Amino acid sequence: MEEAYSSDSRHTNLAETPTFDDQEVLERAITKLVLLGKQVGVSAEQMIEMLEGGLSVVELVEYLASRNGNSS
Image (cartoon, rainbow, N blue to C red; front, side, top):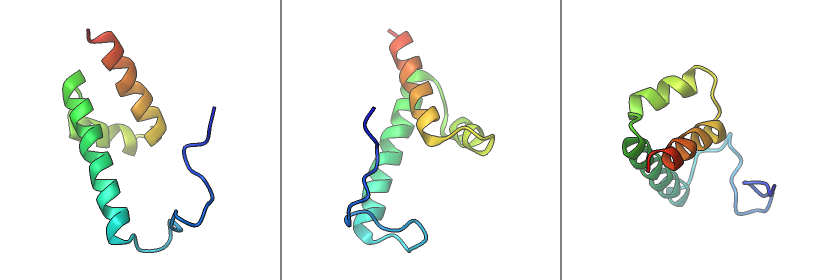
């Protein structure tokens, strides 16, 4: 499986303050994630609770995708 992140210079160090472009990309990604959650019956609050409970972002996306596949 291909890595979701590469080590090229376009990606910022996570310890650094995100640039405007980074924030814009992050906001679009979060919006899409929230819309997918809504489509499969998982609220943003529930997703936050899952992440705070130890679920990784990758695991959350996989969970939502699996529910999306089962929702048809």
